[in-house]
Length: 320
Image (cartoon, rainbow, N blue to C red; front, side, top):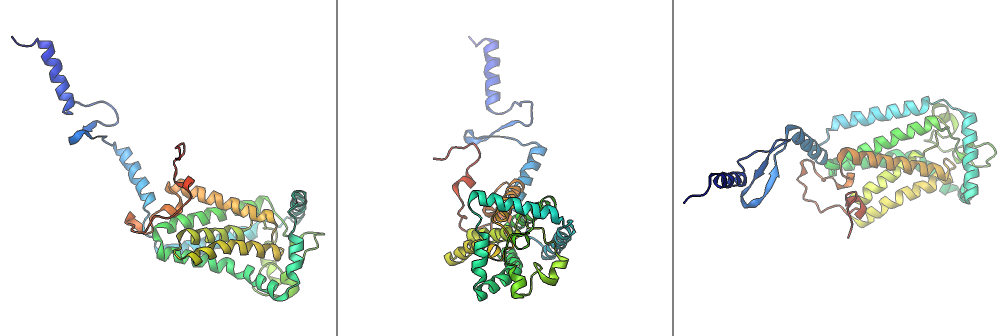
């Protein structure tokens, strides 16, 4: 005696479903693989998003001519915008007074003591003047060249950090004009470039006529030097080179204070701008810049870059 028709039909339906012969309405259908593994077939839109994410994580090799033109054009725009900001001396002096009194309230207003102390050592302050005038550009360009040659897969993201940092700084220059300590009325700071007649800086003397003297907040000497230092620390292989990377922004901080070109708070502003730059790059490439592959195309045989644990843990996940 055979099975009832209803039972046979139900069995056939279950068997067909098990073989994946049915389809489910929606974005895609479920595909059954041998061994029980299943995956959802991607729609064209989902596949495109996946390809975009993958391209962001494995950027193309940068083109030299394009990068040279981009850096040159960007620095030209930076200089033009920075110097085109109206020199609002009254507001700049008022802001300097605010910052100086705020630091005094916090007990960290030691810039004047450092400035006078280092100025008494002639060879040291002269060296710092030349440091301030030259290394700001030399080291930054050197790190960019090193990234381009040795870490092409990370170059574009690292360069983006620098560009965003500088762009945010231009906003600060415009909306918060600030007199540096050496120009603050009644501050009794020593203008070390003027006193020691050193060359190569637009901070004082004839060069001051072509440079905005009230664009001190935030300090791009700190923003750029910290970018260089972190890049060297995370990507260099030799321990002594990594140590130099960390020492560079610290030395720069000492220089900007000793030469009375910046307050402590200007340095904090530079660090905030850099943090925004790193965050923007993270949003674009979906990973932190130093976690990108060293070479383009994703074929990276280098040992993983060591980064803080919180950088690699997804938001909301629990660390063990």
